[in-house]
Length: 133
Image (cartoon, rainbow, N blue to C red; front, side):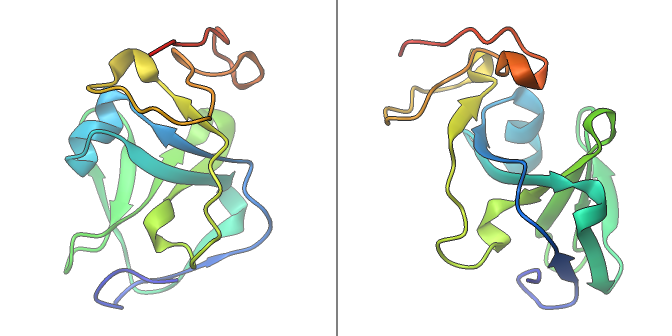
């Protein structure tokens, strides 16, 4: 997979730990969107095989992007040993989200059949509290 202009290529091995929509204010600010589709993998499973991404921190999370086209490639989540890949880079039909996280920061309700967590599920270090739109 690669950025929009093709100057940076990523290789992902293995399966994602989780695929979700994130509504946190950090993701929203970095992507200029109401929420972000992401696919998190063990950090060692996401490797840059061509090009050099540029690090950027908008609020607190380090994200890697293409300097030329601006494509957000992945963010670093070191406390969990993960890299969260921009799900729009994945091949068609490889993004199958199971939940929404950080809905306490949501700017608009998303009505679907997925669980909507106020922060994170308890097994992910959150409260496990759900938001009812």
